[in-house]
Every structure is written in structure tokens, then in C-alpha cells.
Amino acid sequence: MNILKVLFIILSFQLIFVSFFLFQSKKGKALSNKILSIVFFMLFIAVINLFLIVFGVNVKEPRLLLIDDTFMFAYGPLLYFFTQSVIFKNYSFKRKYIVHLIPFLLAVCSVFYILLYVDIDFIYQAMDQNKNQNSTLYFRIAEISVLLHILFYLFKSKIEIGKVLGKAMNIYSTFNQDNFKLLKFIINSFMALFSISLIHSVLPFIGIKNGLLITLILIILFMFYFVNSILLKMLNQSSKESGAITQMNFKKAEKYAGSKLSPTELNIFKDRLKNHMINNKRFLDSELNINDLSSELELSSKILSQVINEGYSCNFFDFVNKFRVESAKSIFINQVDKKMTIKEVMYDSGFNSKSSFNTAFKKFTKLTPSQFKNSLQKSSSS
Image (cartoon, rainbow, N blue to C red; front, top):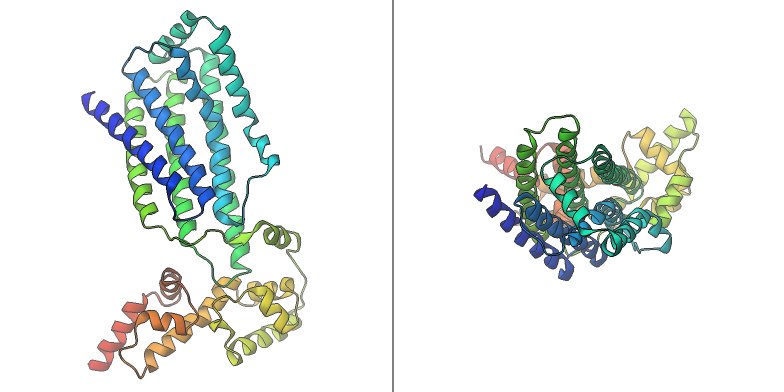
């Protein structure tokens, strides 16, 4: 148990450190950092509260510990707001979003009522029951329902990420994907954390109390891993603004999805698109998007999207990047200046991000740019 105490203490310091680090961080989007900072601060309070309960520390005013219970209704909505702030450009909080926080506000009101009107002996009795895992059936059902409420918002966030990435890849040829990787890690980690917490809550409900210490240790160890990982990833985060698409463009893409093309029309538009890309080297424009290309071809973006999706079996993002990778390969193979750097090749082939260049190159060649360049050098010297 002494080791568990040490883990609790270390984790508490790490959570408050990460919270303050995010709050003042200049990297990434300010709003996203502030929301995540609040989430980690709530986790800090939750860990302190759990420490006091698990190790039976006497508190002069135990009713204050109930404040932590209200946070359970805030985790899900806040992480959903955080997700939207990362994936959408120019995201801002609107009044209508408060509807997601109604359960949290009601919980806060309930706690204030308890603080003012409920007898303290009743609070002590409830805490003892919770500590000894003898809580009432209604309490267990409420606890499980709250965790399901959080997981619902996390699943909602994952679905939103997939939908937005899909639309963005059908509109843009370039956008910062690093923040999306970090976002996926954060959402997946919270899903794992609250899933373990759900198992921890279900065990007494089904009469299995022997595994409670194991699940408690798993929760603490996972949080320890998560906090250290998130800190490391945030330190290496790009300073660029996040967001793949504006909410307005996303809604337009949703509204105008789908069109009808005959096989003959599809082949004609495929040839026109391919010739335009090659003859005009449009893939060298690092900011190329489907709206620009559709205007040049005198096609609607809806039609052009279908031509790429059905004719080339890929999205706009991969369609353009495949041309860029072929261009980069050609530069590597035919380069006269042997001192030309990989970064120079990256820019000359239309990429503006090293991570995007490496990811796309490996996707289409199974090799990184460095590996491809080294393989050419080895074959020429042999």
C-alpha cells in the first residue's frame, strides 16, 4: 500500500503540472489547451479525493468531497468540445453548446443543496459505505450510468474525428495531421481510462470484490503512463494552429455529398483530370484544394470528388499526394545535384510538411524518403 501511496502522490503532482503547462502553453490552439487543462485539473481533484477515501484520511468537511462527483458529468462534454476545437478551424464556444453541460449544472446545484441542508452524519455514513464497497444498488447504478455518459461522448468524439478527416481529405491536399494523431491518442486514452473505471464500478455490482484493488492499481498505473505520454507529446507538438476544415465547409460537404455519373462521363472526366494534373503540374501547389481544381476543370466539386473517389478509388488528399510522391521519386532518381537534401526534394515535389512527406512517401512506396534515397545510392555504387 505504501507504493500505491507514492504513486498517488506522484500522479497528483504530474496532473497539476500538466494542467498548468497546458493552460499557459503557446503551442497548438489556445482554446484546445485551455479545455484540456480544465480536464486535467478535474482529474487532479479526483485523484486527491480518491486518495483521501482509499486511505481513510479524515476530512473536517467531508461534504466538500462531493464536488468531485459533479465533474463526472463534465468530462464527456468537455472532451467533446476539445475534439471539435482541434478538428475545426476557427472553432469557438457558442451558447447552444451549454445544453451538453446541463447534467453537470444540475449536479452542482445538488451538491450545493447537500452542503446546505443534508446532515453531516448521513454524509459520513455514505462515505463509509463507499469505502467498504457496501453502497446501495441505486448508487451503483448511478455510478455506472455516469461512466456510460462519459463513454458516450468519447465515442461521439471518435465518430466526429473520422467524419471530419474523411471530408477534409476529400477537399484539401495538405493539412496538419500531427494534431489529429495527438487528438486520437488523447481520446483513446480517456476511453481506456474510463472503461477500466467502469469495470471497477461493475465488479461490486455483480458481487466480485476481490478484483477491486487490481482495477484501482490499473487505473493509477494507466493514468501515470497517460500523463507522462501526453506531456512528452505536447512538448513535441507543432506550434501551428490545428483544424482541418471549417464547420461551414464541413456542413456544405455533408449537404452536397453524392452525385450521379455515367461510366462514359466518369472516364472522360478522369482523363481530363489526369491530363490537367500532369500538364499543369498542379500537384506542386502545396495549398491546392478541390474547389480550386474544380474551377479550373469547370466541374462542380461534387462531381470532381466522385471522379476521384470512384475513378481512382481514393480521396482527394491521397490522389494529389500520389502525384507528389511520384515527382519526388523522379527527383531522387534523376537529381544532378547529389548534395540536394531530402527537405529540398520535399518542397520541390509540392509537400510543405516533413511528417506529411514521410507518411505519404511510405504509404505509396513502402519506404521512407531516406530509405529510398539510400537504396538508389547503393544500386548505383554496386
